Length: 80
Image (tube, rainbow, N blue to C red; front, side):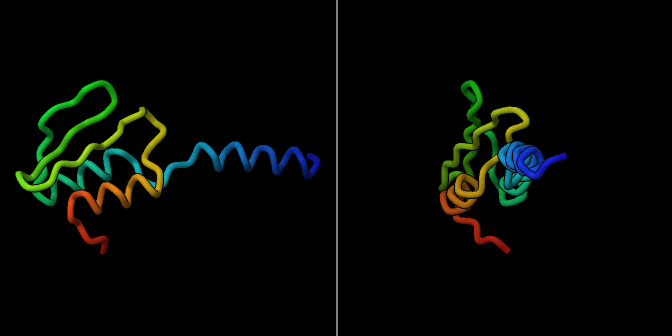
């Protein structure tokens, strides 16, 4: 394999990786007292009575880093 082909394959795999799985984020929210109140299309809405958080679920795509940290901020959860 030539170097360009290796780099191309790596770049494709890197673009398909997500920062967190949707299930992991949902589990974190539920552990912190959030309950799913509704879903419209690929967006789930969770609340703990004080905060409202929207979690995207685009299949196997997962949740990107910036979106993950915004969800934590909106939920008032400090990362450990």
